[in-house]
Image (cartoon, rainbow, N blue to C red; front, side, top):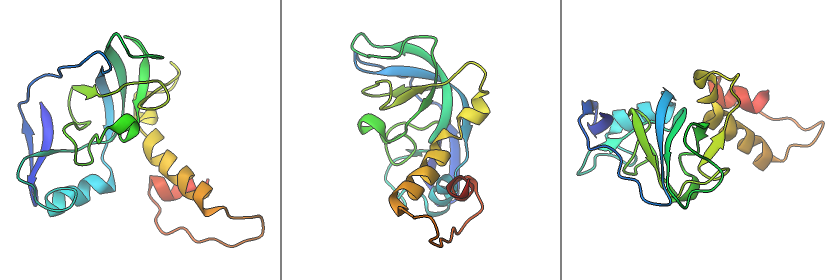
Length: 167
């Protein structure tokens, strides 16, 4: 099963084939996936840049457990609790690529610790870990802004990304 955008305001839960991983890929059993403002926008317009010819999977704020790690995957193994970097290692998970996080089992191509998969401690709930992606976006904005002590800054938005930027 996979949540896909089929056109403007047309979202469906579709039956899809299970992941077919190669030696450099991993399969993550998704435990939690957040709904991002981007997902809402994709639904509204029918895809990343508007309607597409084929269904577009959504969902890119996710955590889960590695169910399978190919022979060439380094740094993660079956049973590891992880968050997924949706754009790491040439993936486009939930952002116009072939995979999305609203599925029971997610294929992560070119899987590697620190690039596409990041281990999470046992004490962190999957729901909290799924916030790593939007929190990372807020942190990236702060780092790129290079604000210095005494300078003024304005953050527009009070969602997870905006709140992460001011934290």
